[in-house]
Length: 194
Image (tube, rainbow, N blue to C red):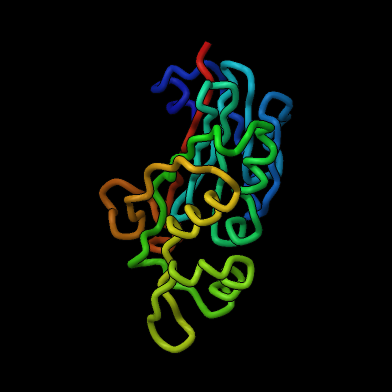
């Protein structure tokens, strides 16, 4: 983490979170230590929001005029429970004024889940059916990028980018918990410059 701060010439130490696969969102400006949350936002320059991932989906948000930024950790549990929607709400600006970037996550050809996970998404958002492909009885391949796009669109965010990587299959560039459970983590960071 010290090397990251130095290499990127960050304006401050990032606000690291104790990520719990939930929907908690904190104001990074007021954070003390590593709060138990899965997203943070900032409205002041120089406050660095950060999330760590290794197959889960990092989502970075910014207001079109640079008034606020946020970083969210969206594993399947948090995504199903509404971490992206909670982040949008906490940012305190109209959802249609936000841009969202979907960072590296496990791809749709590698993300195997069971019926219970698919049911969580489909029960809450019927159009989520299109994000699942049958594998074998009771097993599915899930497109976490598509699921995130659907949730963002339903929350009113109309502009989202990224979502073209697979952390599981691209071992040259990315860590993957599913590929190798003892692994590092990637950091996704965002902040407002002075």
